[in-house]
Image (cartoon, rainbow, N blue to C red; front, top):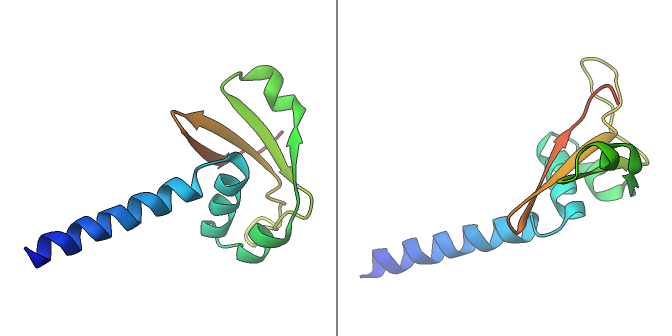
Length: 98
């Protein structure tokens, strides 16, 4: 019985953690950038809504980092992201060539 309680508690903690990280567009975006390997940019940069993407896709919104991280391999800035809402969760992905 004790093993079952530990499993239920672990699953509950994981689900609540995922819900917190994907509960709104900005936290979803910061989570994406953090797990891409840029924790400093994820916490310090300001996020601004980008209107261009909004005109082309009704289910998503575009966002730009004001101080974006620079990718080491290509020396390109990772500044433009698209955030989609799926159910009650938000998911961010990097958009290149905007």
